[in-house]
Length: 84
Image (cartoon, rainbow, N blue to C red; front, side, top):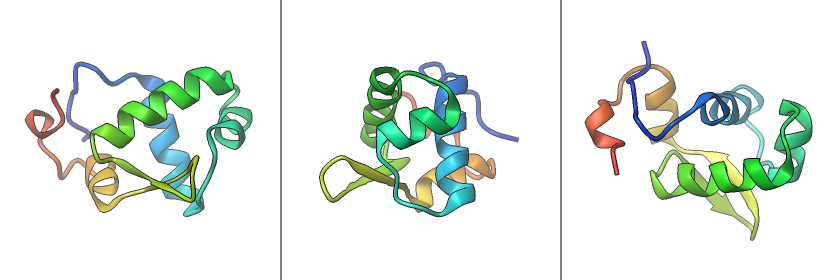
């Protein structure tokens, strides 16, 4: 079970899931198209996820999931570790 983190929302979980399941490096635009959200919204959420260490920036504006992000998805990360 995933930890309950105050600042995170459903979009964040879906971004992490698509990065984990695809094992690809994706831009906010490509992620947004696949999740049916606006690019601006996904870009803002990806920035927050990056600051929390759940995803990392690669080649400018592309992102991939981190080991920490995978640990969050599997419930191996405490919520306190993600609170700002």
